[in-house]
Image (cartoon, rainbow, N blue to C red):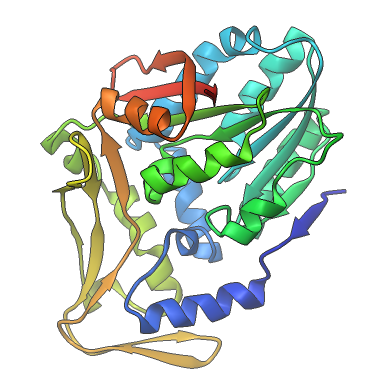
Length: 312
């Protein structure tokens, strides 16, 4: 039986969606909430054109045994933040088990559907799994993730450039406070490559994924346009932001649970964003958050950097 604890309810998500829409923004979590969004996400991950998924997954597959050797043969709790469907996590769980670690798995996500998939995959492979439906960017939820005094050593995962979906500087500091001295964080980030990075978003499956939460509430492709941009974050050299927004080409009305949500022609709805990094900037963010990288790996094309870090 799949076991999932909920700190974040579906009613709370619905209320937050309405509030966010009125504020003309669409946060990251809602790109994985609707069934249509989940289908679009899984289709995107199954297509080789989505290079970030390929890079992150192949790096885990190639480095899993090496990473597993960095942990003692002892109980280990693997907590995956923004776990999604958990397929990358499962590769690492298998490598840790082969090493002899006694692994338990705690996937954390705001998407009920993806959490069910992550738990089901782990259970089918013989791992104990307890899902947690929570928003780890919420300080209250993050505090609830703190390990109890009797909890085993932890490996916290934040994979697929998930750090870049938020404010990476603030989020790295929050995550550092979650770790105990013997715990570790495995985190990755996309290395910025100028125009090639922005061009990577311009493919049909990625656009379908970006459109999915809008389509789910009745906004169609013909109602406006998605605009991808690129900007530098002035807080650090080598910190780059790819934001996107929907611009209404005519007056539109979205519907959620029978409630009308209107956008006037020309209005913008800010959507989720993605930070990219120069490699040394990514490592600097971890260091300034109080984390020391004890292992680093790069994807075959050099465009993805992964680090295993512990409290300094």
